[in-house]
Length: 128
Image (cartoon, rainbow, N blue to C red; front, side, top):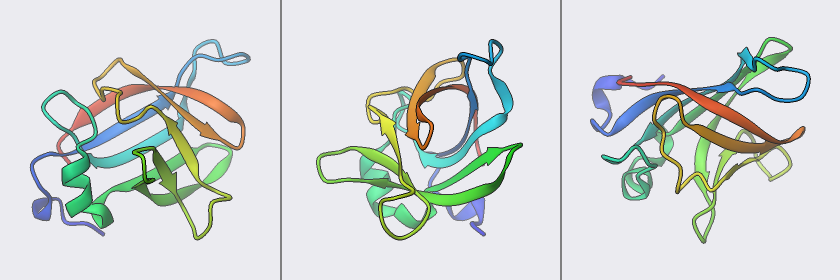
């Protein structure tokens, strides 16, 4: 477990909830992600801070229908961000332009998982 006091002040807890999609006109508050990530002053992922503190950048995927999955935020050469849960690439979830997105309450981000590209709304951003 990560001690929040040991983290840089740039680290934030970000909650993403599944946004409206076909079959779920109101989205789903029981499905989403909890992220522990460094953000810059504009609410974007801070690549320099991530590089220094990679092991502290955590992802928890939750869903009422599945067990939680715990992983890490990673970055491919070229800058593409993804969520990594285990060795290999078969379970990776790719963020769509996550480096350009602002993690600000109310904004939307997209993640590609086994069900295809899905949109999530930033429900909150707070100190861990």
